[in-house]
Length: 386
Ligand code: ADP
Ligand code: 3PG
Ligand code: MG
Image (cartoon, rainbow, N blue to C red; front, top):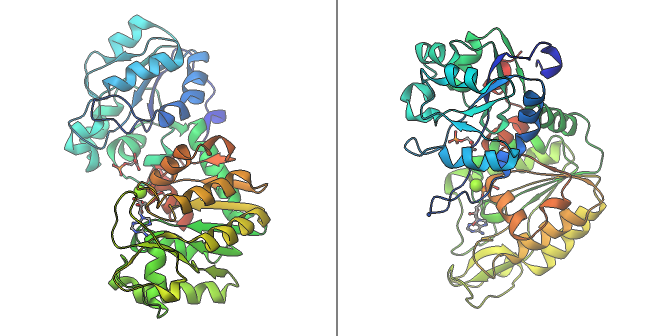
């Protein structure tokens, strides 16, 4: 993959840089979390310093939503005005950049306003690319998408490379996958086995220990004959779950499920809970979090590891008191002397909620892209930068 070290002349060059500004918003329209914006600052500042004329391009999940509030937040973070251009195909982009001069930054509008973006349409990609000297992709979180702004456009511009965020993500994650300092412990949680099957299969071949939390643990427990009563699980994943366990055994990975659980009659805030062993879940009860014993045992394991990768909450952390398991493991990861890595939308949300984010060694910006990278899949946006 080409990096900024391979691009020598940036002064006065028109640079199109793909970023991932797909940030969460409050209903009021304010930005709920600007981590993804801040993650791109090193590359943007590098380009400003080099005297490039920078046009930033991104999507927002909702095609009708505008990136205008992001331009305002970015101006604040850069302590420098960022001009918002109301269209990603505007005729005025270059005139505006020429007026502003070297070291300027403009932000183009949400690419998904055009259906051609997701279709990776060639004519649209050509229009996006037209007039730019260099293409930089810094959007690791969108690297699993083969869209016009992540793929097609890169085929239309000869000079291209990864930005600093993209480079750091790829280098850090590759290092952990190739030669993790051992013992390597992976903790995977969240709702569904199906959304993380590939990554489970890949990581049991690499990790020394795999801890499984969240509703996905229910599917594994059920597959192994445990009566999980009314708990959420995936009926069509029982066989796959057993295959994952078998693969773990074949690769000497200790595959560990919760031994006790926090259960309740329904998912409701402040409802009364019990803490049975997983083999004694009372009738009509739901598993909504890992139990106290599991929390303590897992915290010890995390403490003894040298590399810890965590993705996916251990319980319904959004609803108290089912946040306690995720909080306990989040605090254990934060305290660990291991090299710690976390990623995933809900995982980052939990890390923020429990004030541990600053104590994690590496916080990936990727969600879906992180899972695909860890699975060992080739990401289209990286492939096209080679
Ligand atoms: P991430 O975004 O970090 O990859 P996921 O999207 O896979 O995480 O999973 C997060 C979701 O899983 C949360 O909304 C959480 O409430 C849910 N979840 C975790 N444990 C349970 C459980 N025992 N029962 C129901 N939902 C659960
Ligand atoms: C994300 O939020 O995971 C990335 O921005 C990709 O967004 P998408 O799933 O809408 O393509
Ligand atoms: Mg999620």
